[in-house]
Image (cartoon, rainbow, N blue to C red; front, top):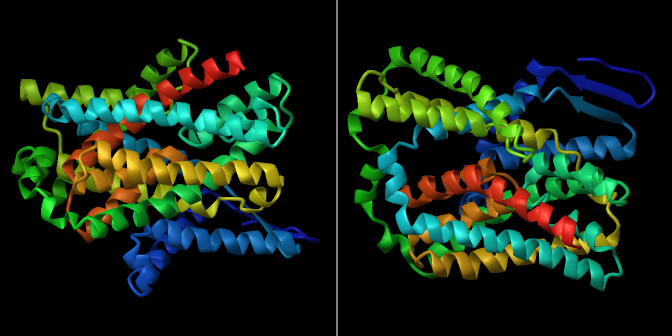
Length: 402
């Protein structure tokens, strides 16, 4: 931890950042169980503690007391390991169980991506802004998140949009918070308003866990589970490098997910590899919590204050769009049942932030009510494997057409 004079600059190294993330996670969990509305609206624990910490660092920054900086190297590491654990769940039987709902949800995501960009461009034109400036608050930071914002911001700057990367990053930061905060309440409201508890299908648990014995936890198997995750991540970097040769923008974890899925299916069909799914799921859940914790404490909330009023209006428009789309479109088209409500909560997460936020939103709902196999199957597949790919294509099309 480094301290400097004048305005105190406090730098937390990788280990200190991780420790703070764990502390705010525990504090968020403490508050969530003791403050009624946090539990009621299913706000994820990392969001609660992390947002409070981010507000504290923002106050220190704007008052000139201190400026915090973090080594967030482990954020990416935790994200990759979490999605690798998701990849291990994707055996052919589980993928087939997605069926028609998976295809329908994929179409809905495509519609969302296009609608986000049309909304951003339309509002920008109404406010007298350039269409490309509007794109900085469209699907680039919303569905794309910080990764796509960092990739396409410089592209927009090459087209003449000054500070596009900064604006995209700030919009992605806003989306991360908004998507996390609104996902739980949206799902919770739908469940209570339509009395969806009665639509829960308890037998669906077998689809998610397949055979019960594959998900039993054994202390001695956690080490092999870690080794399997590491191997998948390592080989996945090679796959990611090969995919990057196509010129498309892919999330860093895509290669690891593909390798994990291949390892899982080899094990399923040859019987020569035992994949320790219970332990891998536990490790993935830990990594998800750590990722969100680090992501939240490293937010620079003052970036939102730097946005001009028109851009704040553009972001507000995206929030309204997301609420209407999830509450009315996703819920109704996906079946108007409990699974559809959980999917709506998840869509808020990756539609305005990132797939880990979607998983956290759904986890908060499912912990309160019951598991949703359909949602846990569809959202990671669409959000991780298809959304970024389709978003990159759509963004490229819009940039070249406007």
